Length: 59
Image (cartoon, rainbow, N blue to C red; front, side, top):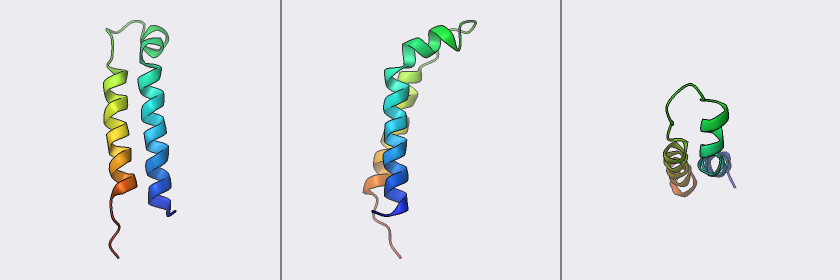
């Protein structure tokens, strides 16, 4: 495995972490703000990670 694929896997795992802990993070970290869409950001981060994992490296 090359370094780019490992970084992509790490980004996917971070996206899963954001999606799973979205409600709790809103309750503890951002108590004074309205609900921030951590789950949506986690999904977007996960998609970026998938692109990093499956993208062909040329060169």
